[in-house]
Length: 404
Image 1 (cartoon, rainbow, N blue to C red):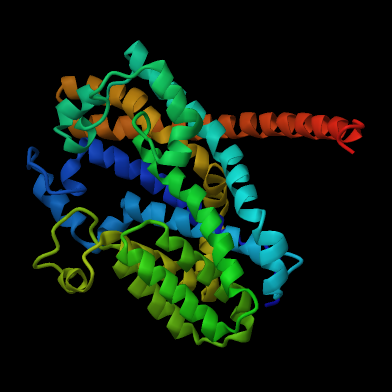
Image 2 (cartoon, one colour; image 1 turned 180 degrees about the vertical axis):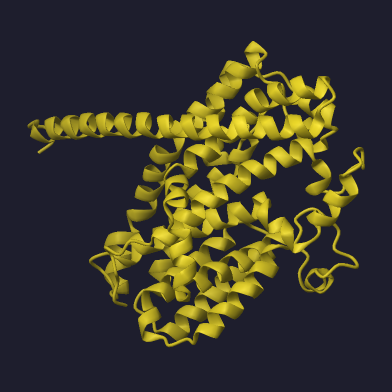
């Protein structure tokens, strides 16, 4: 393989930015308009209309599960890019002996250092909001009759369990009682290791055997109903992207992949699919994440061959959102249950349901963008300080006689 290490892939950052916004929209709709997400009690006049949207291809614009599928794929894609671009490129033996021996552990360490500070901030802020009464999730759930929102914060929280969740419980064991949308962090950590191991398996093999390995790994893990399966698709996507100049595929194939991918990606996550356009898909495989993974992968594949889509997803606003997508994801649930809930409940008590939702959404998104930018800058400066301190300590230790 001939790697393109320095190549920038901007449109993936744009997709990441759009996905972060979709996740926030998904949670706001789940809280205030639950029938658009799943078929709950039709408590509002517009509920039947919203349900029809939820079981149509239009749900692609607010499907949080699909957005997370894009996050997983893009994360795995760039992990694969790093793993393939080593000095052992094409040399499977040396890669396994000298790189694989340490890299999974290095990936765990790097991912832990990258994920944990944000997780800690998010979990502790939610803990503070619950203790101070700023968190209005139960009041919001009661007003909107949201079964989804009712399930959270029904048990008292304490500082000990909160710290445990923030520092290691979430990222290593998938504990997410305080911030339930952080369930995916555990799989991002495991996925980074799976990518390295997969690269070790396919390193030095021809394209046919690599494709067979990717297919087998995805099939086995998908049948086991595990989220890790998406990372094998991510490695395959990078493998193809890296070799695409040597593979001549006509434009209409990419266009077909786009439309098929959009349809697969719109498979309803929580609606029954009987008597819908998705009935045949359910008969083949009734796990929504399977169709979301395949659909998201086909969409990204289509982007590789359609420059117009690449340019659109590389526009400034989407690249800006992509740069703060992690911060948006981390802070979204907190602001939903504090700022959004307070504004919505104010208008709800005055009899303005729809107006309250719109005003609360606009204010929440504006504040979310501002806080995400601030958090990113704070984290960046903090990371620079910690990196400098670590390098200084390491240098001093190496200069000590007992280390030599």
